[in-house]
Length: 141
Image (cartoon, rainbow, N blue to C red; front, side, top):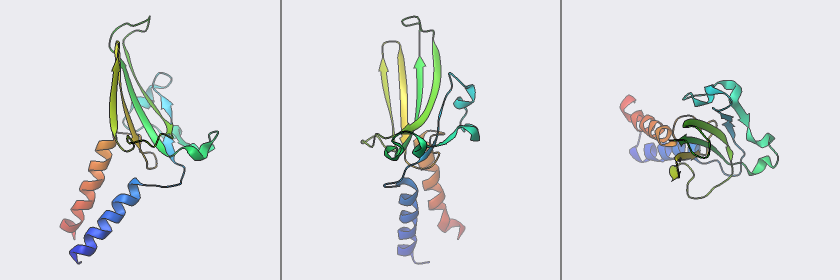
């Protein structure tokens, strides 16, 4: 296969899995405070939700995973950690990336992604696995 064609196909496949313009999305939705299985790397099938079924469902374009950690007792809250997965609509510069916030006694990591059920492992891992798979194609061929 011609190298130029290979690179074009690779980029097309990569971007088609990352970008879904104008479509609603399906995500895992759960909170480990209510169901500890939400904290698993890949939650059970029952936690898969179609974001378009929410009120104003057409605005949901991303999936979100938030890991919250309370490091010591604050305002009566005991030290704890939880995972929250949900549909989201914030399409700011944080899409397909993670960021951290911290405050008095706690911190959170928020990861967003824009493909179906992508709010499992961290977004960075997902993209690296996809990219490595695509780059391995010429070795296999």
